[in-house]
Image (spheres, rainbow, N blue to C red):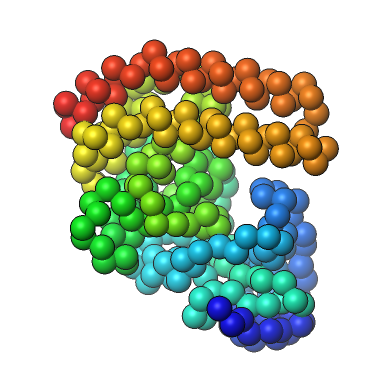
Length: 269
């Protein structure tokens, strides 16, 4: 993929349509392989991402979501959504106003479930692949840290991990990180609300429902792999790494014990 090359913020403002850039502030959050800047321009606030390693895939799908009035960060660059900014691949997104929530109410969980189901439905339309009903466009990192709440609605951000894959993987990711914040508690009522509300918008096959425990456990392995990488980079210490391992071990034990919950739910919804 040939990318347009630009070397200054004036050019970036022009090609994205965000106008004259007033200031930029580096944000030390999220994936360390993606450098983020909050851009304050004459037309508002935006988020610039500079990719150090892996390029995001399927960014035009983010534009498609915006065109369908899906609440998410808008892709500001044309075509594939990436340019070379000072020699590095970069994208620019609209800044979504609102805040994240440390703990989700049942109402918030319902909103998250319906948001994910709608994204999956739009992803099926976008990919136009009808021969694989359980696969489609997945967010790849769908959890509450990527949900922005304001008085009007909940919006989805951070599409760096977009891919075409099994849709149930997004469900497993959400449940894993929700249970992680609850220190491995099963939270059956909250899980049931999420799955039933998702199912009310987009039907989950019984086979996919019974796969959820494996998806949760897989997320645990990925979380530990990421934690060990952060440890090797000196970003977390030995004690914190061990606490994470212990918590994931407890969570995996919890999920194993409640496998019957997903089987019973698969017969109900």
